[in-house]
Amino acid sequence: MSGVTYRPLAREDVREAARLHRLAFPGFFLSQLGEGFLREFYAAFLGPGSVTVVARDDSGALLGVVVGHVAPDGFFRRLLVRRWYAFAFQSLRLVVRQPRVVPRLFRALTYRGQVPDQPRGALLSSICTSEEARGTGVGRELIDRWTRELAASGGTDAFLTTDATDNDAVNAFYVRAGWRPAGSFTTPEGRSMNTYTWQDDPA
Image (cartoon, rainbow, N blue to C red; front, side, top):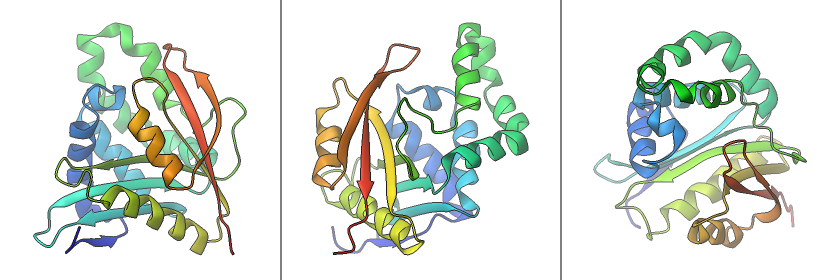
C-alpha cells in the first residue's frame, strides 16, 4: 500500500487507536469495556520499554497500530499500581450493566502478560488494522517493523497469544511473519488460545 507512514505511537494517536481496537475486535472483552478503558490501555504504551508502531496513510487516517513491552510482567504490575483507579472507573459502566463480569475484569486488571509455560522476552500485546488496510500488507509491515524495533532496542525474543478457534487467517498470518507455534492453553472463560514466539536472527 503506497503513501503509508510508520512511526512510534504518540499521545495524539491514543484516542484513534482505542477506537480502531474497538472496531477491529467488537466481540472481545476489552472492547466491551469501552473506548475509555482502551484509551488508558494504549496510553500506557507511551512510556519506557514499550515497542510501538502506528501506520497512517497520506491523508493522515490511522491504518493500524501494534503495541508491546520488553518486560511485560513488570510493565503490567506498575500499570496496575499507578492507574488502577482509571481502569476501574472506565469499566464501571459495564460492571453496573453486567455484574457477572467482575471476576473477568479482575483478571484483566491483574494481567501480567502471563500464559502457561510462558516464553521469555517481550510481549506483543495488540495489533489491529482498519478495514481499509486489510489485505494491503500494512499488517505485515507493522509486525515486521515491531520486531525490528525490538531488535534495535536489544530484544532477542518475543511472544504473543491469539485465539485458536475460528481464527485460521490470523494464525496463518503470524506463521507467515516468522512467528513459531509454542503451545496452546485455555483461559478460565474457556477460550482456546495459541502462543507464538519470535527470535531475532542476526544472520
